[in-house]
Image (cartoon, rainbow, N blue to C red):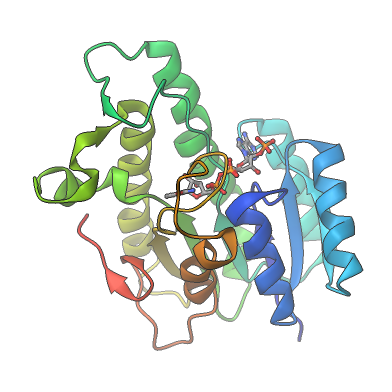
Length: 243
Ligand SMILES: NC(=O)c1ccc[n+]([C@@H]2O[C@H](COP(=O)([O-])OP(=O)(O)OC[C@H]3O[C@@H](n4cnc5c(N)ncnc54)[C@H](OP(=O)(O)O)[C@@H]3O)[C@@H](O)[C@H]2O)c1
């Protein structure tokens, strides 16, 4: 039976490439995007490659959108096999430096609304459909900037980069990954966090060394884990990262 996947924030960047690569594995992909024009454009490009992709309007910070997507998936499909929580924003003023003393509560709230609360609300809403899958996979696209281990390591290249709102939202997402994996430990569902690497996108900037195609690989591999694969992990290209 054809597997069904939902990728959030899939109109561009790593999410678009994730949708493309999953569809290339003959998976039916629901391409989530908050902007209809951009979502439909992405759908058209992937359909032009003969891939089975359907645009779905989804702003993950909008509860009404989440409700509609939940109803749509439950009415159209027997189960949801793969959820890739990719959508996120970077709202801090800069990557460099440490803005912990000054970042506004508004920036913190706006960042958490999408990167954390939206992701948690969507995942909880879709869990009944994922539980109907024979092998559900939830992949949270996180970031090493949310890693305590990295920020405690003065030799790590990211040590000097401390945008607080974005990083804290990814730390919270990592906690969600660990707790959800534990909650679902008696099921066939695996929940893992991925660091894509530093990727050339709106969030990663033009300076980044990786292409979106390369950046999508860790998340795609975790989405395709077989029954022997791990759950409750944080990794990049098969290498475990410190929480
Ligand atoms: N690039 C990197 O170096 C890097 C490194 C570590 C982790 N990551 C993570 O990788 C993931 C993808 O980011 P990216 O680098 O590909 O950046 P990107 O090109 O800016 O893509 C972000 C995507 O998320 C979408 N999005 C934002 N808010 C949303 C919302 N409320 N509802 C639905 N979609 C929303 C954006 O839609 P719009 O086009 O409408 O804004 C866009 O499609 C993120 O989780 C990011 O934190 C990236």
